[in-house]
Image (cartoon, rainbow, N blue to C red; front, side):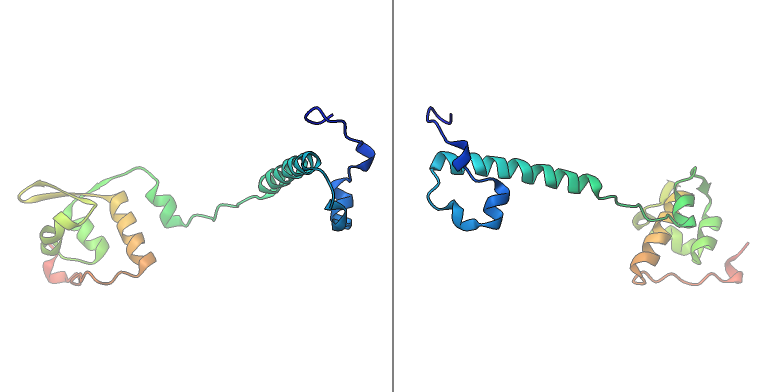
Length: 143
């Protein structure tokens, strides 16, 4: 019984029958059509859920640099940071406000996050950003 009406279930085609012989849809009552659509939607949802559950996304293997970035942070002084990026102390001081890994401690002192510096270098390599000119480190600037 569907909405108070008796339906001869023998006359209701199965979803398999309809997929094999679509012409059998003609002449079915709106109640039967609604019941078949609800059943088809339920089956479609089950299939979609199973397909999504079956998909496994393998995370890509992290590089050694990415693993190092996730390790404990260390504060580098200006000389260490300048040497790692191939810049001068002067360049670091002049660009401290634009570098995400640098904090100005005082007018004459900077603190550089090693993890932040590694992230910054990795981002520059990944995107091939060579728009910021970094002067080469020369021995004449070393103490």
